[in-house]
Amino acid sequence: MVRTAILTVSDKGAAGEREDTSVREIRALLVGVFAETVYAVVADEPEQVREQLEAWADSGEVDLIVTTGGTGLSPRDRTPEATRAVSDLEVPGLAELMRAEGVKKNPKAALSRGLVGARKETLIVNLPGSPKGARESLEAIIDVLPHAIDTLKAEKRNAPEDWHQ
Image (tube, rainbow, N blue to C red):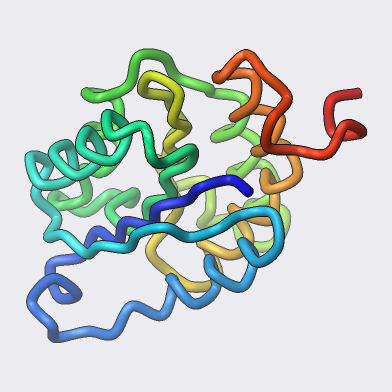
């Protein structure tokens, strides 16, 4: 199982003023191969996002971190910057794939600034905050994620053998 953490980045969510409906969409897609180990909500504060990403990635207990929210053009949307700050490397192809698939259904998906990066052996994926955007973005890359994680770990531990073909 791929050990997964979900981080919601939302001022209103962190203040308890809004229910996070995107996390339901994400959890529904993760069933099976992905096991959610932890969940947290932080405000749209880059330092809070960085601290949570670092804590999970550095713990060695999480293979995949999925963030939702903070990827748009609003002045408070800084999840990609926080992710870039903690990442050892970026994986632009996955972010490009999410946007390419998204614009097929909604041209506004091109406005998402989400990125995919890695810190140590943990993959970090930024998804939009809207439930539909989060679901469609994750659907676009979900089949590649186990192999990407195994590659980061330099082993074939988390995915069936045929995923490594």
